[in-house]
Length: 164
Image (cartoon, rainbow, N blue to C red; front, side):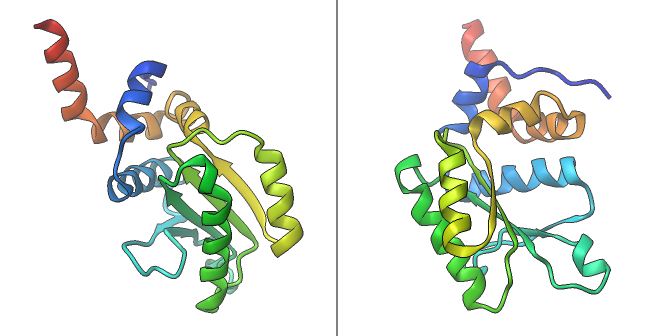
């Protein structure tokens, strides 16, 4: 299966202004495609801070420790959103060891953010911001296919309007 590269401009146009619900649906499709059946999507509101988790740990008799949070929170409030997510996970009895924070924003200084989160919570943080998502979409064939299928009607509409 080959990758059909998505240009930076098209990616930004499609992903930047998604609602939280639509972004969550897209992110679940991308990570389900990239990770496979070990990714377990959770969903909706009041999910206790988890939009998904890795089932690998559950399969060997342990509680999940890796959780995903999909968010359209702007970069200035990302740290607060991450902290609220970890607090919510702990408040419902989950024991996060790694939080994968996925956003349609660009997040600068991710290294400092990771360090702050670990120092405060002893939870590892991985950030998949807009730039990293674009890399995944343009390098992982299944994620690329999921992205293109998710936005098929949008891409057709943009193509059609460009022809007129």
